[in-house]
Length: 243
Image (cartoon, rainbow, N blue to C red):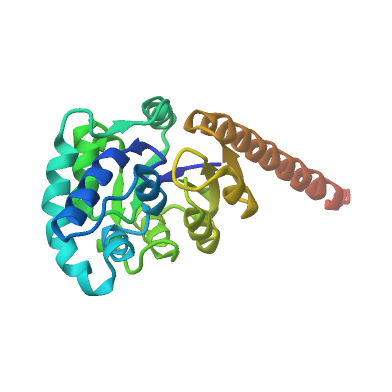
């Protein structure tokens, strides 16, 4: 039975890639680098903004780049239309909440930017926990961030589901020992995601509902089956009383 659904943010629930592209290219321009294409930047998102900057300017200039990138990005995220929910994301959040699921965010984004996005889109209220790499023991693909969320919400790992759009999201979930659904709406391709054999796969977030319903039905059947088996075993093992 799924009691907790943990979501990645970028490429899973939201499209903030235009704001990221703006801020990356602003930073590159100030530092004297050529601009990068939106496709190149989108492909590179996911491991946190420091890693993103290192990729484009190198480790030596990464700290200087971050100082430029972050104030610009805070402004870019607040621009009208710069960030939007992916199709079906709001519906799945409402559905899960209506069915008493705990919800959480596990993102490699800094907490500040994650909260800006969730508030801007009016969906912060849906989440019981928002945990980001800057406040987790280790970033994804290490499993620590998922373990921390399950502990905080007191949910057994077997009852937790993680949803992400990148290969290292799949790796993170598998290492954490939780069920993983890969959704092909972000930076990794369908082929890359399926190669890692996630527990579930969907090409859009709306497919998550069917996957969860199927799992809950199977769980109920298994529980009923176990109860019947235990009942039969108990009856078979009982001996008639002596009169």
